[in-house]
Structure formats: C-alpha cells, structure tokens
Length: 259
Image (tube, rainbow, N blue to C red):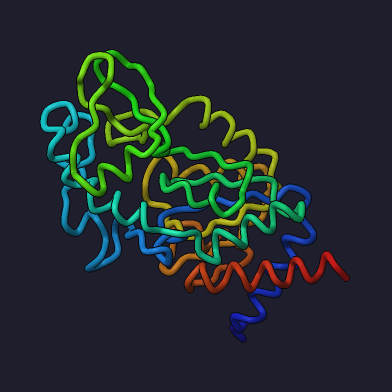
C-alpha cells in the first residue's frame, strides 16, 4: 500500500478546507510550544514531568496552599509574557480572515490566538485576562498583573477583601465555563470539517469536543506530533510540527481562493 507524502497530505488538507462550508479549528498546547510555552506531557519538558497537577494546579491545592499554585504558575507566566504568536497561530487567523474558518476552540490560556488576529475564539480552559477572588467572587481585569507577577513573584490580592486572586483559568476540580462550553459545542455541531492542531486529546472533557463535529458527519484533519485516539477517524493525519504544517496548508488554501 502506497503511503502519501507529507506534501500530498498538505494538499489534501487544503482541498478539504476549500470544499468545506464551516471549518472549525480545535487547538491544544502543541500549537504554542513553538512560541516557547511548554506543554504538559512531553517527555523531559512537559510541566507534569516536574509538578504533580493535583498538588500544584487543582482548586483544592489553591485553597489550601495557594503559594504552591503560584510557585507552579510563575515560570509558566514568564514564558507566556515572553511568547509571541507563531506561524501556526497566524495561519489560523489568516484562514478565518479569508472566510475559510468559522472559529477556534482552544484548550490554551495564553491569549496567542487573539494576539495573532483570530476573532472567534472560545477558550474552554479559561484565560489570563481576568482574575477572580475566591473569597468575595469579584472579577477584575488582569491588566499588568501577569507581567508584574512574572517579574516579582508577588501574589495579587483582591482590592476589596485582600484575599488572594486566582486567574480566570480552569483548575483541576473546577467545571468548564458553561457559556463558553455552550458556544463551543454549537460551533462544532455546525461544522462540516474540524481541524485538530497541537492537541494530544487526552484531557477530558475537552478531548471529547471534536466528537461533537464528527458524530454529525464532519470530516477531520489532525495535526499533532504524537498519535491520538482519533487518528483512525481522520481524513488527513500529519504527525509533525504545527508551526510548519499549518502555514503550508494555509498557503495552499489562500492560493486556491485567489485563483
């Protein structure tokens, strides 16, 4: 059986996007690793290689020992502050601007899709643009909180009650934001093509979100360094760097729209 070359797979992926009426991207940590933000499970570099997620990034540990959470967060915050959108983020923004992508559903909290120019972005694990007080429940714009914390390590406090502030991200033990989940699932159920990029698809319940599109007949393009449980259901599978593959796909798509 002849195996397709990567160039052939890129061409096939581009044609699927051109033929679709409602393509949606679903992204994970792997789309931001080329920007210098570590993922969670890669051998030697993943965050969970060094930290126990239940001890460092759960709502229970935050309530009991917030200093441990902030100790885990600070090096990640430094990486996020320094990061810039990479060619994969930019390629998705270009596809949306050209009308070839209806939106992005992301597991990431780093704001890089927004900064790259994507407009319809659903962040199912939250984001760092706001902080919430776990005592009085007030929400505050983060402003320069992340930059200040990354530089000084000083934990932000609620201006109302002086309790510690938590970034508006979903920790282990917390529910996903219901309004974002609803919007994400609606977008996926209306899709006829889903492009999974940089996600290992192992973190539930987010890992099941692509099924919302597949189960109503959407086709799947999957780009990730490692295999996933959905590889066998994909029309195109490319195990390579998303920062190389996505721009190549976007160039073919955008070239096709100009012909």
